[in-house]
Length: 208
Ligand code: FES
Image (cartoon, rainbow, N blue to C red; front, side, top):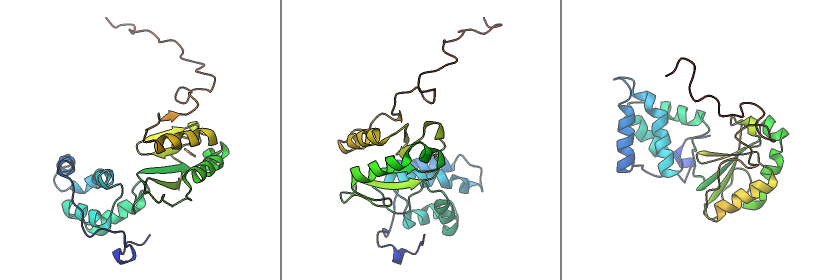
């Protein structure tokens, strides 16, 4: 992806943290020893993204100044990690995993349901700016494949029907319950846990 602002008319001229976010950024910087402040780059980029929904060039330049880093070093971090959005995305950014385990468990149907329900393709945003759709690599939750990542939540064990229901809830302004959409307990077998079914002893031998 090019980072020349002239090729990206959506780039703002400047960026400023809110007062609360600036205070939070300084608090994070103080966690690191003198001379190691650059280690704060990822959590501070995360603050930027939570504030704006994405990470602009102006924001990366400011983060570089705050951490005494060359802007290129900040760009290198932001472009390496795909969780940083380098252009505006929808308020509800729907990231569908289509890696092998999710594909074997039906992610093609999930992608199709998202496209149909949202009326957009991969990499696109709805006209009202509310939803955007992206295809992502393994989210590390294959045991509950197929998986969609929205905000800080994973929606798991999806099929076309549950994907449509989930999107409809977001359209109504609700935040549907995250996790397994089939109701299974975390990643236990579909029929329920087969081991560790009792609560176990409340005290260990030698306690008390
Ligand atoms: S392949 Fe989709 S979560 Fe791992």
